[in-house]
Amino acid sequence: MTPTVEVTNPDKLLWPALEITKRRYADYLRAVSERMLPWLRDRPLSLVRAPDGVTGERYYQKDTPKYAPSWIRTVTIPAVRRDVAYTVCNDAATLAWLGNQAALEFHPAPVRRDKVERPDVLTVDIDPPDDAFDAAVEVALLVLEVTDNLGLRTLVKTTGGKGLHVVAPIQRHVSSEQLRSAANRLTEIVQERRPDLITAEFRKADRGGKVMLDPSRNSTGATVVAPYSPRAREDATVSFPVVPDELKAIDPTAFTIATVPKLLDRGGPAAWHEAEREPPQRIPRALLP
Image (cartoon, rainbow, N blue to C red; front, side, top):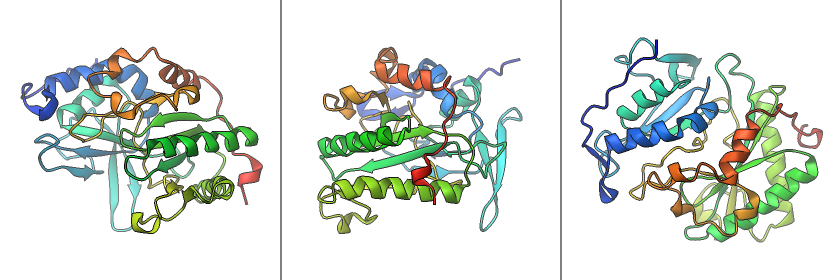
């Protein structure tokens, strides 16, 4: 029997500037659940919660709270200091419950709970300087050119911020260390093509106005914001799937809780939905040690 989740304090404002209440947020999660859940299923999930909305205190949550209903699934992963019991979101009821807990961002790991030592997705995180989305697009197209040359099928989405993610579903044939090594090699190849535009420097002060390619999203303990996840920003932007042909024309701030439910028939959501049914691929030999 499917649990029923009641929206408590339904008129509470989570995004006050846009008058988005908990009820409206619950409606959003219901609208995108069919497209979002496949990218959350069986994955350890970290959350950004903001009980008083985006203008109040927010915090990053890994552990499932002790008061969670008995039907909430979890997976426990050993950490340096202690074991962490992550929430696993496999159904609309869990998604609704998390939304009612004011979980405003969903950050799944690149692994699934039955084999947490074997990742099944590679992500290239493209982080441009402020107000330089066009530079992020230029780098994303270069990443796509390199991955296409390597024979690696990829997907693209906005981050809900100023950047982009290029994502490749993969077979679970490498360890987290091998995946990180492959991601490092991929970013090196891209950077070698445009050293004037791309950097691997983590600190913004050291980037010299260049676009950062971040391979650190590729390990058991790493996370990447999920497609269709909102961001805890005052403009209620959403991480949204897109297709390469539209990259130069999109405005990432146009994908919000208010607009996305009407955009689910676009090419990006269709491509990500189709990818769910495709067999996963092996990491190209050229990226492995």
